[in-house]
Length: 235
Ligand code: FPP
Image (cartoon, rainbow, N blue to C red; front, side):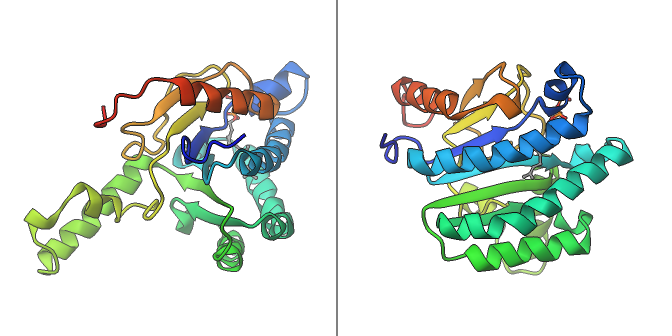
């Protein structure tokens, strides 16, 4: 299936791990473990589909407010993921990048993130962008502050601030805006995710819980997107 010309970038809000576990009488952290396994599966399917960018919401700035046990479990999973994934990422020619407030994460995790980014920087088949400790309003505010500082220091004129120059101040600098945003688990909210970047994105909501979200449904969504009428002059 060649969708390269049609869908270039998919963003996903991976929701429903907790409910998936509850339905099975298991702790929430088991749901996150299965969710993390699905990250690997979906990344592989994405590569096969020809889509070039995949952005996953792995941990939001709001997620810091969850119980210490749950945050610790998520950080542990992340740590394991960072340790294990280099081989798979290199074999599959995937470039990995991270967006978010990384200073909030442990130094150990930050080092591993940087290492994976550096090692995979020249890979070209798929860019996997993982949003970690990410919040879109925070991202927009920090862009505003950076631009204001440049204006104050006479490095930038107010009239030279454009949509393009603003985009270049965001964590997602250099990444095209998503064509598709998927949220699993039946919730229909954006939850502070890529607010600037999804201005023209097609939204897809599915009741499937994240650990159950598979290749068939993903391809179905890509197909639906291809057949949706998009009146382009961007609206
Ligand atoms: C929402 O489920 C999911 C998250 C908190 C983030 C997603 C995290 C993962 C898929 C695991 C770690 C990721 C990586 C990259 C290793 P929820 O807990 O909000 O579910 P609920 O709404 O059913 O309670």
